Image (tube, rainbow, N blue to C red; front, top):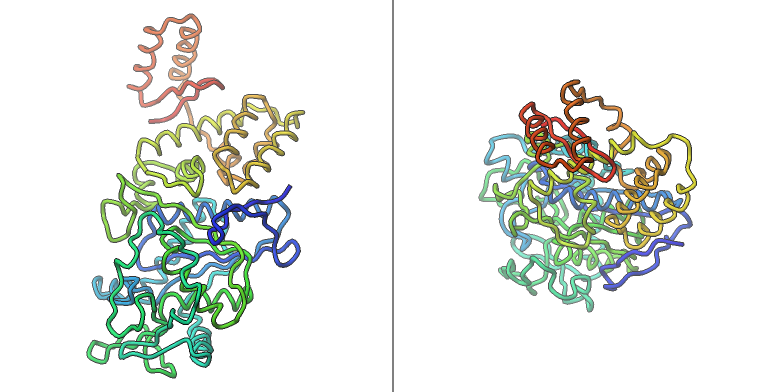
Length: 456
């Protein structure tokens, strides 16, 4: 067997093997820490976590680096406008450094609640200014840069295959819509270093460089930091669909121009999570749903994780509260079913494990893998099988099964009476009891594995 992944660069599935035996080098684009991350961001981070878990159950060690963007990400990908951290500091009258550290801590707390394995190494853009300057100097020596009145730019006309990763226009983007030429030679040229505006107040985040006081462009950080920690060529680089058109092609261009070597062997991009047809964005209140939003409405972060596992990472997904409610109910039934399984290993376990491994190795097919898990519950596999499967899914089933929810004896007795009525096909009487239980603040869920009682 082996892992097969869809490679965005080739637009096809390819059999994966790492450059170094049993060691995978993985770089994932992390958060820009000027505000809380929305759940669309977390769809990407969950998919990347599933990839990491798939490598691990196949016996690979994963060297995972994730960047923390705390400078350089402008409000426009066309290299105009304010730095997002600087803008937030101005609007809130807070220190940009404090803002960055606050939202970095929040992000790390969120991924812990979502059972996302942390990166082997988290790297901040502001901690690697020297590395970014050195990389720009290399590009300058090789003739890939030019200087304008507002910064140092990369000349994309020097790269014959620039934008090859983007291929056809990705859904949700409009090619050229965010381009403003100003002094740029080509519409696709991008900033490597931006100069501080001498006519504006002194920036909180700025550094001296060979070209003048300023700050790095957004794209250069990922190339500089991935090469420092993972080498000039890495096995897998991940991110959301929105990075496919601009950010990642720019990373490829500057990295391969500097080293003369392939930058990334496998590219993985996660489809958008939308709300009422709109792509999620921190700048749009109606789509900016955070993990805290879910918790305030009574959901466990793992309800959201389960919802994400039900759709393949390359398929766009529309979020709704009804869908999240369904995911919560299903996850609770899963936990209840796990508690009824035998502890002793069963004959079906081995074959079921093989099925899950096979589906996960086919481009991380989590919906199909979940169906195998449910098949195991119906076939009365063992708890050992479910716990093994949970290494793949990350739903923390064992912990959830230990959380005791006290069901009042009267509610339990009514549920038992209702079940007897249903077996006798006395549907009207059974519905009457169901409504009575709901009035008491509980909900009865009927499943093929029996009923489960939940607190409303």
